[in-house]
Length: 576
Image 1 (tube, rainbow, N blue to C red):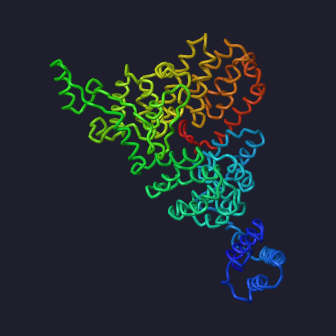
Image 2 (cartoon, rainbow, N blue to C red; image 1 turned 180 degrees about the vertical axis):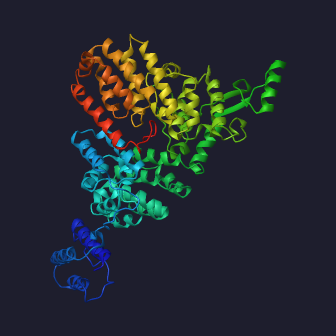
Image 3 (cartoon, helix red, strand yellow; image 1 turned 90 degrees about the vertical axis):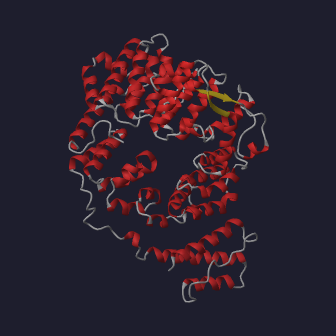
């Protein structure tokens, strides 16, 4: 039996039944098989003088009978993997297997990253008895999928093929073919995943398939499937993305803009770049004093740029033109912002900051990260005292987040603590996505500085913790912590718990528990052993009564886990 033929016939029958036989009469999907097979019977049913409804019921009965017969036939999917297992992975020891089981029974799920890191370093496989649970856990927890898939042996790969919810773990490209039916009948998330895989194999065919069903999809479906085009995105996608800027749904238009921003040579980026060039100009200043001209000449000679060498001229767009609307720009601004400033904000968000100026601007002549950081420092100095300083600083900050420009993020935060950055932006709310661009060492140094600032800010410390510390901890939540940062946070927490009211420390206690699986183990052990019974009782205040009982269990478990993987566990700072 041809599986593809069976799927085609069943799909044609189901579509006719769902649409109504009067609107979409059923007919045989293909006539490639011989008359002696079940396909011949299906053709006889289709040509019989019975009513359309009777023919469809008979066809459904035949196809169900064919499916029942096929269930007993041998299938390559059901062939067991070789007993030898995976030559590249060793089986887990009894202790390692027991720890993984204990991890789930004690609900210490945040320690799973430690177990998987040790398994990857030691090249051991997930124990067979826990494969279903781990595959299901990966289905629900996307950040851990890569680590779980890396710890699967051939038995795990075999098992993943047998359950549609586990196929995210399959590594080989041939597994994609097993899910071809997903594109037509799967859930939205499954279709998006299939489309991403399809893009890796054949980007043009995947885009054409999405274009074919585009008019039938609802707004949420269009947005989700369009996001999948980021996989293998290229300039060949630009023309169609341009056309989507006229979509009726704003989220769909925004998704198309997000993809167009990633295509530096698209016509849309070129038009937005031209608008930025018309609005912004960097011109060399001409110092009147002879010493100033001599200093500028020396800097030009050695290739060094300074803010004193430049003048920043800004001209807001005069009017909102029809071509701006066609390019996805919005005319009406957010509350509290002028129209012309809003138009310029959208233009500057569409183009990386290093492309804001004409090609002949020498400030960004060198594309190395160090040179770009120095150029951004010049731009930030030019913002000081400028008529549109707030707009330009916010544009630079948003630009760094949108384009993940580490050099710009480092320039924005160079030599500043979080409190200084907060005062400089003149905003209560900071863009903490910017912090995720920084190297881990710089981010932890910023944290230690900020803990020192908060220690001196007793009157409004709780409010500052909510606005700055907790978002910073969220940025660090998925990283492992070295001893210095761990000890600094735990010491700060001790002081706050003693000095502030119980109701006001709930969030800090909650964050301590969330981060405990990631903090340096030796720092955590020393902190807990030195804590008095009264101090431990403070951890169990309103909202977190479980911490005094669960913290020693967590510390003991992490200690035994470290011993089980002693030779293989990564050093602090290496945990993914």
